[in-house]
Image (tube, rainbow, N blue to C red; front, side, top):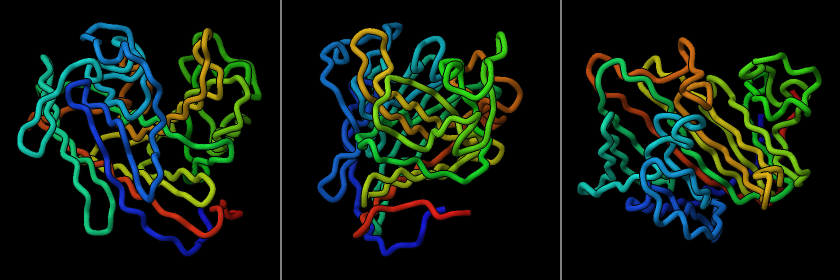
Length: 289
């Protein structure tokens, strides 16, 4: 929980680039840019099937996050405008996304996916955030959190052979304090806070809240990519991903029963991501349970 402090709602605006995978290139409010970005010219010339190029921002990852193709098959394809909607025409699905700011300043992204009934997929709003070493990720204590093999040397027990992931409780699954988003220590860890639809990121007096809703029966989670200068092996950099997602694993190939979103008989599935920003006169802090 977060201690109740007087907060000011900060209106948020977003800029996207439909031509280059629908990527969100900016998320701004109150003079602050929330999205971390890096100059990477190769991002402008990618084609479907190319290796992922990390330019930061927020990538739409679909139908998988890790696996094949890496970061999915939406980020490398051009989208098109249809009125106030961005549309991705894919051989396996059509994805529509609409962005709206309400009167309170909250930013809402509404998604509609059309595909054959039974189509299984993962989706993540792969948001890389520009936050400092004192930033925290706030989520309900006790949330079942899956950690993945890159954390093998950091947890409080040996990693079992061939285990795709292990599960602990937030905020310190398997002894790893994942709620702390810095300072850089040369590690890189991925985790999924399963069946968790609401989280907040605090960075000094600023707070960004992310809330996900979807049709009944769709598994909602939040992925965390906490790269504190541990990735890639050559030319490592800091990147903090807080990624509301449909599903409970990174790789669709590893998804068991209930781990992925499934298109119902109607052939359509809907979800909504709402982002709100706040500013306080003092740093936000977690209260003692």
